[in-house]
Length: 278
Image 1 (spheres, rainbow, N blue to C red):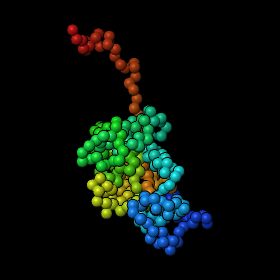
Image 2: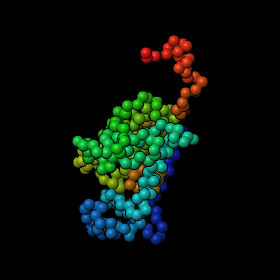
Image 3: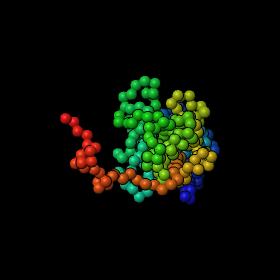
Image 4: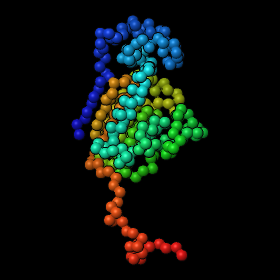
């Protein structure tokens, strides 16, 4: 399969109106920031900037990029559509077996099985992992999912892999349980527009610093023998990016047994294998 890289957001060319900020403008704005970054004063300060200018400012100052208004649901939609492209093509969602690992409350589709390390209302040492949880999540660790090899059609994972200490091993585990032709759709933050995980002291915080170039390298070193890198970094919002792995092989969907091959109770009784309680 040919690798399809659609890398739009790295083009920092702007229109004449609302063009890139100068170094002096960035310095003046940065000097006026207060903590935390989401403080109302920062929102008021940065709101007049275009989205591209805010992304430029974020990268230049190593601060978290802020999105406002309609941009927020647009980011969510872009992330979810990109991750869902890991589903095998040509099949309705209700015909597929998919997992949403580390779901939180972003269930995305009713046809995905939500998997998480805890549920809504959970208590204990893991209670800080998510601010919002799914009450019906299937409980499992991301690197130890209780599914047989080659049984899952596709997996999506949005903003959870950055919390995993061994993303390479975790994805290898997912590639084992995904069927040939199945996919893995992942959304992770671009640390250059969020924060440097080398300074993250939270036990449930980020454990590594994802970038598209790092994913390219990890793919070549660890996953290229098992899967194709179907897409990478395909939407415009800079805070996060997507990548989709497609496992080598021909996809065969789940199929219910042919009724003609199922023996009735009468047939089983005639063959002497009927279980009967007196």
